[in-house]
Length: 107
Image (cartoon, rainbow, N blue to C red; front, side, top):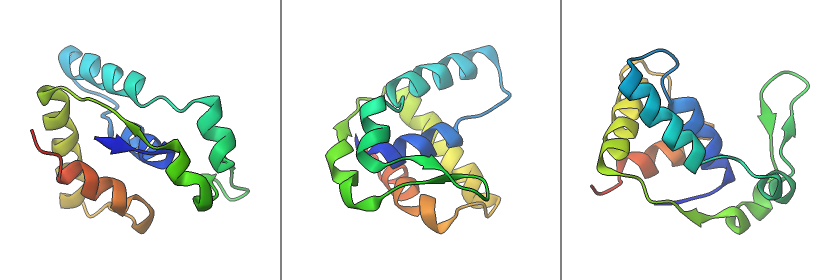
């Protein structure tokens, strides 16, 4: 799956905060794969918003794209998390592109 720095942020936010040991191990493995690098931060000028949250410059986002290989179990977990967010009506406009990428991953 080809993801960029902003996808990495949203994927990390999709991961469960409280779950079984096995799910937490998978979440940790995914988090390691999508870790935001210092180069990512600088490239998109990632910074804190004065009102909370994060701000970034969209113009350089393509420069942060990277191919990430997820296992079938990780893909299944990410898809489950997106489905959970969708059912709870917690999909925001800023996360929509990442949600669609995850939803459309082929196993």
